Image (cartoon, rainbow, N blue to C red; front, side, top):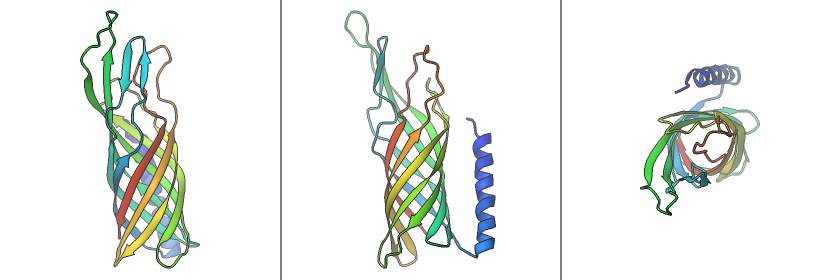
Length: 200
């Protein structure tokens, strides 16, 4: 797994948030975010008899940290675990397909999101935007790209000190790190997730 660039990004963001916290006197929020991918992790593709697809949607879960800023703004960093479902078979010349092979591609996503909360009294709708970074292991012949951009929106409600924030996120990933001459399963560049954040 290629963790060094992502570790550097995480350290930079942590230092940035820490500096902002001391400068503005704001409080960090910590919690967990989880949910379900609404789009397939692997593209449905057939090339030279090789067929790749996802037979199920993927779950998403991981910790999050956020820093409140003035003017209803905040910055959020997530570390989200998402295993991509990968299925494949080969269509033989006699019209028979080989047995379907099932596998998962392990990915970690690190969105760094600027968030604006609308100042309403009961629930606070919000919009968010920022870069996302991704590392992968257990590749199973895939080569997922390492960066993209994320746009999302949802609402935040309070239950005592607990904040509950359901949302929809869309991420567009850069093209996979593959050569057009090589037959490999491709990840879906357009990713939609239904998530719920729980944090203090």
